[in-house]
Length: 359
Ligand code: ZN
Ligand code: ZN
Image (cartoon, rainbow, N blue to C red):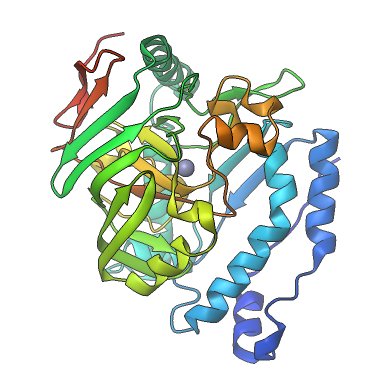
C-alpha cells in the first residue's frame, strides 16, 4: 500500500500571514509520529520535493527560523532511522511554477516549468540512449573512487581555492560513500537523484582555516551570497557574507553542532549539473554541482561501526551531531584537494576541480 502525505506551500504561507505570532512553536506531531512508525517498520520512503524556494521571502526571519527548528526537532527521530539506512529511501525534485521561474526568470511560468523538466532529465542522464546503464556505470565509477579513498584513510583533506585554504581532519575509520546504499532489509537504493558526490564525515574538532562558498546558498527562502567561514578546532569562529549574514548566523546558532562540520563531499567540476551553469535554488540538485561541506549532523554510516554507536561514542570518535545539516558549495574549476597521509606527506586528490587519481 502507498500512503501519500501532501505538503502545501500556500497553506504554509497562509500560516505565516495569519496565524498568531506566538503559535510557531506548535507542531502537529501526529505527522512525525506516523513517519517514525513507518521508519521503525522499514517502509520504503519516496520524497518528491516541489517547493517554491522564495516562499518565505519577506516573512519575519525569526518566525521562519523558529518554524524550521521546531519542524526539524520533530522530524529528527524518523530522520535518525533514515540516516542509519533502516529503510530504502530516495529524494527527487519535481518542477512547480514558483520554483521554475526562480531558476529561469526570463521565461514565462509555463515555459520555465517545461525547461526545468528538460534540465532535470538532462542532469539525471535520462536523455542517454540507455539511461539505466548510464546510471549503473556512473554509480560504479563513484563506488570505485570511494574504495580508493577508503583504502587511503587520509588523516585530513587540504582544500585550496579562491578564498579557501581549509584543512578538514578526518576521523579514524571514516568511510567514503556514494549515494548508493543498502537498507537494513538488504535492498540496494540510490538516496538522491541526481547524484554526483562521494562524501565522508570530518572530525568535528579538526577543521582549521577559511572557506569561501563558490555558489550562493538558498536557505529557508533566503539567498546567502559570497559568504566565508573561518574555523578553529573544528568550530566556526568567524562569519562574513555579502547577503544573508543574519540567516547564516542563525543557522550556526541553532545548536552547538551547527557550528561544526558533518560532511565533506567531492564533486568534479565536469559533472553535468556544474556544466549546466544553473543555480537551481534547491539543495538536492545544487549540492551535486560542486564539492561541498555541510554544517551540522554527520551520517552514522560514514564511520566504521557508527550505526551501532551511542551518541556519546559517536561524538568521542569525532562524529558531529545537530538538528541541522546544511550543505554549501565550495568547489570550482580552481579548486585543488590534497589528501594528507599519516606521515604528513600530501597526495593529489583533485586538481583544477577534476579527479587527480585513476580508478
Ligand atoms: Zn553531500
Ligand atoms: Zn549533505
